[in-house]
Image 1 (cartoon, rainbow, N blue to C red):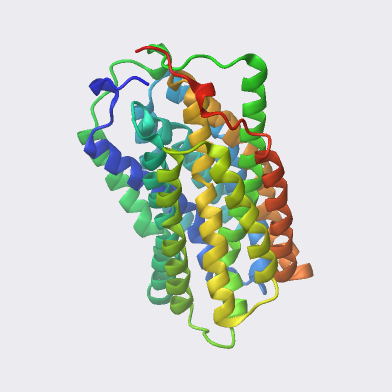
Image 2: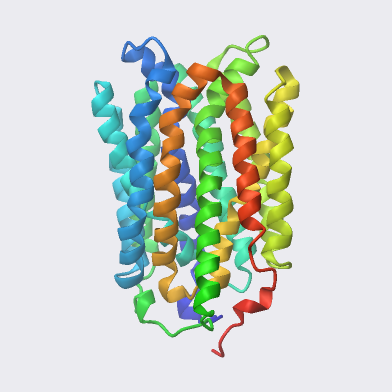
Length: 399
């Protein structure tokens, strides 16, 4: 892999890209944390009835990755990240101004569209030239998941003291401020990624097709689990801890603590990715999700909270692998496009999880949902079992 200084991100770039990942996930999950307050404000009897209106955000989060990835490779990743910061910040302010469920649905869809830019563009920009992409992805993943934790903590606090609209306004203004800093501190790209020198030997077409299929299948199933958990955990904790805690700010703090602890798994996984073949780490991690979800379906109180920390650590720990597979098997010149394609497929399909979350819980309860996620984990493990184990299949070309 090339390590030309001109291609290595500066410290300011790295910091802002990691902040961007945190903002990306935070913005997508403010609604899930504030859904009870929003439902009350919009005079809906149950929060579950409001969840289907968010499907547009997650659908466009997937679909928008295709043009975002293409533009990132062919036009430039810096310019796309600038659009991301200003766009998602403005979209959050738009959500705060909505007056009914349909306006909310459209504004959230705009949030999802701008949020779609980050993953296919920001992560390839971050790892280009990295000698240890695993830990780089791990730290970036930690930042993204801390954004999820911050969504739970800040939203719970702001909703309680200032209302749900302020919960969108504050991070929106922070995103715009990060965009200003990105413009001022991150140097312009001299060459678009697609025009740079190749750094990886191309894999045989059959093996490349197999790897891309595995990347897409695992990304899709993992995204289903991710969407079900992160969008449902707030109400899930409220239900399973109902006999102990009812204050929304306390629930938000517990959810933030859960996400913070679980996020640390990404640092462990990132370090392991740089040292061992992906399959030998990924497969055991996914297999452990199955009993964690199944047992959690039958437990309440603090015992459930401990199990929730466990299964979220396993869910978050699995996140770096799809990006690591792209880094290991795909040349940097086309990484944004490949990432955009797999995200578009994965999140386009997994957006159904957000649409179905409310109806599933309303009809069958959270116990059924947790059992369903155990089944999804079993499918993911089956797909991972076909991943090549030989790390040397990604031999690098001379630089």
